[in-house]
Image (cartoon, rainbow, N blue to C red; front, top):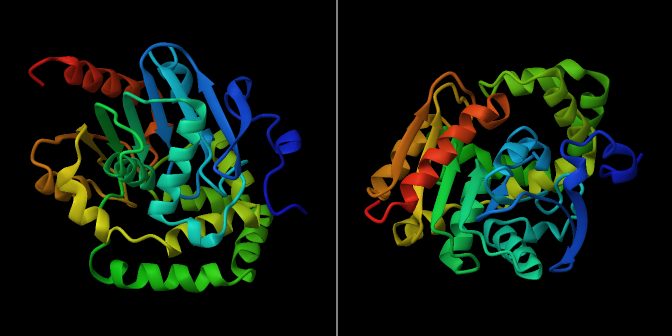
Length: 296
């Protein structure tokens, strides 16, 4: 079996497949989706997901914006770099190389979970200069307490082993219920189609290895120090039922960035944009309109 999903087979029922194409940038072959017209808007998914995460939201956004979504390096159908490049600066630089190759200069950027941190890093590094950054359940700050002490060493240990990704991939293939339990554990309730897409990805050890190496190389301390220098307007969206990045994390970030706007969406878990894309669209449109006001 292949280590990574194969587009010719696994991409047959991929959400928004008609907007998909492959491009070379920064030494990687990327899977991207591009649709719509209007102000350019960039979408970045979180760790372990792929462009399918925007499956319901992308076509709605495309009615208002020129939207670019992508599979992060090593995720989904995008090629994997060296494991050491799956760090926050490495991922930010890779996505920056892609947007430069595409001559895509986003005015609005939307990131989910770790995707929000990547976008913040890109803004601070100057590879993009949007006017608005919207963080959906953004993992912008280092974990606290026991989770913070345990998370990185455990991820490093798992990432060094080729056995761990294969073990979990085999489990995903054998027991579909394990993926539903995993999704339920985030506080979200996904459709059977959504569960099937995560099962597809997690059944490939290469996708899992990229996610593990990303977590193993993740260091948010430099971002924590530099966040107050962030230039674009920032909207911190918390999902009230999120068990992965609880809304209190958005409140912590707000303390560092008093000018940021804090929004809480009730009834949604960590994957709230997948659960209710129409509701999230309405929030994004409201926040974009606020950002367009001269006195905002």
